[in-house]
Image (tube, rainbow, N blue to C red; front, side, top):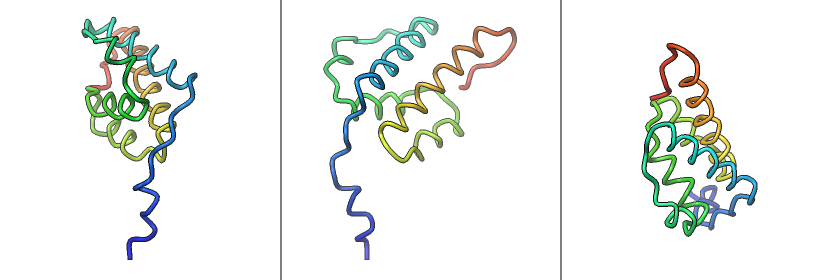
Length: 102
């Protein structure tokens, strides 16, 4: 019986504009620091779920960080983890001798 997984088939609610702004701010900072080109037009048109999930999959973070993204119970939680990971990586790069999360 798989009835307990029925909610998995329902559309995921969008994140708040504040959450999306935090994701975009983190992406912008991360991309600038790591000299990564971003198609901002495509990013602005992407649905919240597609944006957060794509960034989670494409991120260069390690296995533990990817697992945290995978285990996030909601899109909002995944966005929060993604932002936190990007901010931690940026902070690690700003300090001397500390390796990034990837």
